[in-house]
Structures are given as C-alpha cells and as structure tokens.
Length: 386
Image (cartoon, rainbow, N blue to C red; front, side, top):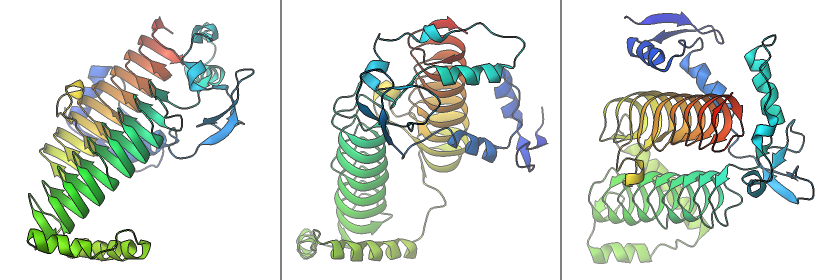
C-alpha cells in the first residue's frame, strides 16, 4: 500500500494518508478520514470547554446553585456531580428504539440533548468542586485536567503533584509556581522544561539542577547564576540581595530572563528519551507523528515511565498510550482509540467525548466504566447497550 493524497472536505486543501494510517483504520474498522489533520483537530477543540465556568441552577428539583461547564440556557439538563453519580436517576430510562427512517447522527444528537450531563467532570475528589476533568484530587481549586494531586490551584494538567500554583502540564512535582512542561521537580518558580530540578528560580530546559537562578540549558549544575558558575557562598549572597517578594523586582527579572533565553541556542524541539517522533514536548515515546505534550509517569499505574507509541495526532496525553489517532486530553492506559476528547483508561474506543475506563465503544458521550456500547450517552458501568 502506498501513500494517498486527498482533498479535505472542509478546507479544500490537500493532505496525505500514509500506508500505516490505512493499516490502523482497517484494524479498528473505520473508513479513512475525509478531513485533513488540522481541520480534525479544530473540530475536536470545539467540543472542549476548559476555562469558562458558569453559575447556574442544578436541574434536580430542590437543589442549589452549582458551578458548571454549561450555561443556564443549555438545551439539556445539568446535574451536580454528587447527584449525577448517585442512584437517584437511571440513564437507561432515556433509551429508545432505533428509527431506521432517520439518520443515526440525528438520533444520537437527540439522545445527547435528552440525557442529563454532569456539571463538572470530576470523580473521586474531595474539596475540589471547582475542578474539571480531574480524578482523585484533594483540596484543589480551578484545575483543568489532572490526577491524584493535592493542594493545587490554577493549573492545567497536574499529575501526582502537591502544593503548586499557576502551572501547566507538570508531573510528580511539589511546591512549584509558574512551572510549565516539567516533571519531578521541587520548589521551582518561573520555570519551563525542568526535569528533576530543586530549589531554583527562572530555569529553562534544565535537568538535574539545584540552587540555580536564571539558567538555560544546564545539566546537573548547582549554584549557577544566569549560566555563571558560582561558589555556594557567592550564590547565597546574590540570592539574598534580590527582593523576591517585590512585584517590581520579579517583573524586572522576568524580562531579563526572557531576553536571556532568546540569547541562548535553542533545541529544535523538546523531545527526550524518544525515537522516531515528530512534534514537541514528548518524552519516553517512540513512533509518533504530529504529537504534542506527551508525558509519562514513573507510577506503575500508568506504565512505569512509558509515554506513547505508534500513534498520530495526539495533544496532551501519553502515560502509557499505544496505537491511538486523533485524540485530545487523553492517556493513562489508552489503546487502539480514535477521535476521543477527554479519555483515560480506554481500549478500542472510537468517536467519544469524555470516556473513562471503557472498552469497545463507538459514538459515546460522557460514559464511564462500560463496554460494548454504540451511540450511548451518560452511561455508568453498563454493557451491550445501543
């Protein structure tokens, strides 16, 4: 089989389907896409609200106001998380016979408008009511996407983290502030691409560093100031002379650090311990194409250090993922999945919006712990449903 060029039915631009793509589509029994990768990515993004929350009434009679992903004028009912997960309602009550005189998508759309939706995708969490798409959190606030974190606020995608604020895509880190794309770091402020770093300020692309300030591209260094090696005494003296509690001082150092980063040689992409991959922010992975923010965790729960493999067009995911195409905000034991937004611990899952711990499902919305579903919405711990 050879590569095949096609015209996107949305933007009318040419795109290529590679031989391995045809093999994947055949294996999961779906036709090749008619939209190009860029248009497919934009289509997925239209499904996901990450940052806008609404105060509205819960549609359960007698319940109080809630915070929700959905505004009060939404065309479907919205339940608070506690009631949605309870036995106070039964998703199977909304089942209906298939009407062969109408198209599947018309009927699936009608079903999604009838089945109540959960106000926030939040599971097994304590004191974390203002978090969305998270699980097993404790005392967290305004976090979007995360797992088993504690005392974390204003973050996006934090896994196994504690006591951190204003971060993005961090893993196994603690006491960090304004840290991005980093893992296994402690007490870092204003950093990006930090791995196993400690007690430092203003770091970029550093690994195994401690007690450093304003450094770029360092490996296993200590007591450095804007890439200048100092003694312990010199470093501590300089650090003591900086009023880090002053907003003006911090802004001055932020500006200085930005300019210093631009003066240093840059890697073409931030890819570590990976082979045959294209994209950016990828670690411990192999055989990926056009993938971004692919992480891994040392936890055996999610592969013990495995990122992703044999996949294409993944955005924010990994943590033991294999043979997945066109997925966003996914990972954590994800296998043979296609066109998913917000999915973890899935196998053979296709065309899903919010899919947690499901197997052999096609066209689903907000389903959990289920298997062998087709065209279903709002199901929990169910099997063989259409």
